[in-house]
Length: 446
Image (cartoon, rainbow, N blue to C red; front, side, top):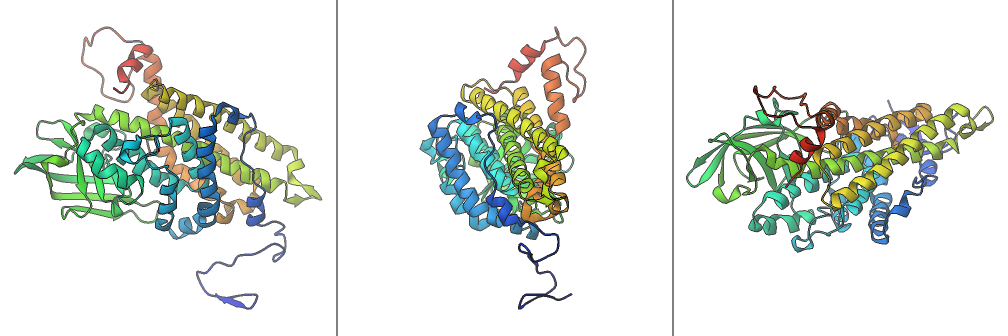
């Protein structure tokens, strides 16, 4: 079909963008709605922040408003990764934002880092997913488990997005149960030979360094750095996704992948070594949920103040107000939890069960908020230019990665009952039963 738009002929596959007044019933435009949005802080949670934390938040917000939001829906619709946004994103300091300045990172506290993540997720859930992989997983693994030489080699260029990393733990048959991973690392000629497969690995198709978890011949799970140009490493982008479309997840195949002995991360000794990395990344994903929820609510609120039906703005309708109140209530509670959890992390008191509750809470509330916002926008809610449907779809991916909602629920359940519900039963006579507090203390990262 060929459509005439003014004096322009638009061919098949090209978008026809209707402006205000150009179609019957189109009383508002996405552009006008975006101009009407204001950052949500109904309970003045900002009063809990330092001036430095606000400066970080505002800097990332300005970048997102200027560079990310105008382009995000287009990248998402085309399932295209936004490579051209990476230099500006790196300039904000967000990559490895809470890591030491000696490795080229910003050295922020964890509250500032979380605020930055929320602002990025407000603009693009897909770009926030790239951040979680690059900063929350790959850089975190090198920072926490790598040698000094590995840190100096990789962290400074990764902080600038000059080098890209990925994190290969999940496998086709080992998702929520990483202990069953089957990728192997056999010693050979002073190095290692890796064989196996990884799946749902973000950034892997263009990564310079892949952090790969594998089982050594002594049955220990260890971690290795595989450079992206290794001939034994192949990463294929997973096609036809309905979530996280502008972030590329891949299937990695490792076939006789030879790496030198110094590519092994010395701090990775068993599956428990993943704990500090996953805790850091899961923390970031909790802020991600808050950011996406905020954008959905801001858009819905602005829309209701402009959209008119039955002779009045729909913001005056009781059912619409009820939805808006439910959204801002959940966001306000998530803001308080986010700042509190960030303070715990800065104090060194954040345990894995608490961060699981944090991620579980914020993402589930964001998922509900996105659905309510889509409802408030009516039919316009499915248009990508309003951003809500993009968030609604992206949050489905976030709901499952970094610990599914069910697994995080059971982690919290184990912490409060002392009983593990998601693993084989322990052997008979395991010793005295631990209470929830003791179990949580035992799980704390070193």
